[in-house]
Length: 143
Image (tube, rainbow, N blue to C red; front, side, top):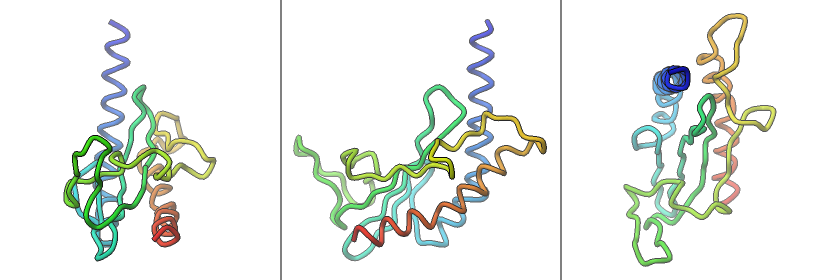
């Protein structure tokens, strides 16, 4: 029974984190021209598509953001399938063609830690917003 409660608690934490990301980070992404729905976002330009995907820790309590870019025509897979521009995600790219955006310490963004204020989700979202410039630099440098 204890494992079930731990899993339920992890799910609630993840749901809370997603809710705060949707409330604070997604509007900023929209202002920057991104479309899509959580956890996958894309910004389609004339010559390329900027990609961003939120990837949560399977064990709970954290996430990273994977960013990448591809041709404005989408991504062809080795087995012949082509992912169109309006469906492509960062996960469609090879691992070595993605940047993993992490927190200031080079770790996953963690929301399973205690803080004095108890507002861990808001704290993590604010830190994430501060790191969005790293993504913009990545896309600009890899055009």
